[in-house]
Image (cartoon, rainbow, N blue to C red):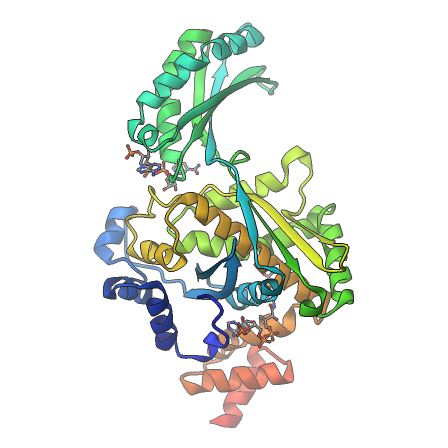
Length: 416
Ligand SMILES: CC(C)(COP(=O)([O-])OP(=O)([O-])OC[C@H]1O[C@@H](n2cnc3c(N)ncnc32)[C@H](O)[C@@H]1OP(=O)([O-])[O-])[C@@H](O)C(=O)NCCC(=O)NCCSC(=O)C[C@@](C)(O)CC(=O)[O-]
Ligand SMILES: NC(=O)C1=CN([C@@H]2O[C@H](COP(=O)(O)OP(=O)(O)OC[C@H]3O[C@@H](n4cnc5c(N)ncnc54)[C@H](OP(=O)(O)O)[C@@H]3O)[C@@H](O)[C@H]2O)C=CC1
C-alpha cells in the first residue's frame, strides 16, 4: 500500500510504525531506519579516518504506483519540500494509471586508453579481431558475476584525436546484473591492460569505468489527467516549461536539478553511489554536445499531460555499501526491491514525479509558497525557536508569506 493520505500529519514514530507494518520490517530493521543504520564501528570499516556519523533525514514518499505496484519510497535528503513534492507528484499520476517503466540490460562501460601507437586504426582493428579472447580473459576475473548471468557482452574501439595525438579508446561492455559494477569492471579493465598492450604495441594509461552509463537506461512515463492537475492551462504551462528545458542549458540545469532532488535521495537511501548517478545523469543530458532536460512533457490528443523521463541508472542491490549498510537494506525492503533493475525503475519514476511537482508549482503559484512554507521550520530554528515554538513560528510565517529570520525573531519575541 502506498496511498497513505495525510501521513505527514502523524508523528515520526507513528509513521514508522505504519511503514514497518506495511513492509514487514523486523525490529532490527525498524531500529536501522530510526537511528541511521550504522554504528561507529561499522562506519570505521566503510571509509577512512572516521570521526563519527553525519546524519541526514530519512523520509518516505507516498502515493507511488509503478507498473501497477504500489511502492513506498524511502528518501534521504536535507532539503525541505522534496519528499512532499515527490508524494504530491505521484498522487497526481494515480488517476492516469501511475508510472509505466522500462529498462535496458544493466551494461556498463570500462574504458581502456591506449597511447603511443604508430598505426592507431590498425591497432583498433587488431583489438576488435581479438574481441572474443579479450572477453574471455575479462570474464575469468569475475566468475561470480558470470555465474549470475553477467559478464562481457561486447567490445568497442575508437580512435580519438587529442592534444597529445591520436589514442585508441577501448570500451569493454559488461553486464553487471545486480551490481553497480565499478569495482567489477575496473578489475577487468586493469587485468586486460597488459594483453591490450601486447596486441597493439602501445602503452595503456587509464583503465576505469565510464560513468556515462548510456547503455544502462531506466525510463518512466506517466499521464497526468488535465482535470487532476488544475486544467488545460496547467497542461499548456508545463509543456511550455518543458519546451524551454529541452533547448536552453540554463533552464535545463535547474530542471534536471529538480529531477535529481528525488533520484539522489533514493540513491542515498539505498547506499548507492550518488556521485556516479549524478555524473551519469548530467553527462547523459549533455550527450551530443548540447545539455538538455532529461524529461519531456507533451499534450496528448485527450488534452492530458504526458511526462516521460530517461536517465542512466547505474545502481546496485549488491556490492558497494548496499549490503553492508543495514539502513540501506531496510530501505530496499520497504520498496520491495530485490534486483537492481527494479531500483532503476523506481529512480526514473521518482525523478519524473519530483520534476512534475516542481513544474506544476512553477507553472501555477510559483515554487516559493510550497517550498518556503516547509523550509519555514528551518528558518524558525535558525532564529532560535525551540520545542513547540518551531511549528508555531513556522506556520505563522507561512500564513503571512513572510519567511525570514528577522520575522521569526520578531514572532519569537512576541510569543515569549
Ligand atoms: C510542497 C507541496 C507538496 C505542497 O502542496 P499543497 O498542494 O499545498 O499540499 P496539499 O496539502 O494539498 O497536499 C497534497 C499532497 O502533497 C503531499 N504533501 C503536502 N504537504 C506535505 C508534507 N508536509 N509532507 C509530506 N507530504 C506532503 C501529500 O502527498 C499530499 O497529499 P496526500 O498524500 O496527503 O493526500 C507543493 O507545493 C509542491 O509539490 N511543490 C513543489 C516543491 C518542490 O519541488 N520542492 C523541491 C525544492 S525546489 C527545487 O530544488 C527544484 C526546482 C523547483 O528549482 C526545480 C525546477 O526549477 O524545475
Ligand atoms: N567511477 C565510479 O563510479 C567508481 C565507483 N566505485 C565504487 O564501486 C562500488 C560499486 O562497485 P561494484 O562492482 O558494484 O561493487 P562490488 O565489487 O562490491 O560488487 C560487485 C560484485 O558482487 C558480486 N555479486 C554477487 N551477486 C551478484 C549479482 N546478483 N549481480 C552482480 N554481482 C554480484 C560479483 O562478484 P564477487 O562476489 O566475486 O565480488 C560482483 O563482481 C561503489 O562503492 C562505488 O562507489 C569505485 C570506483 C570508481
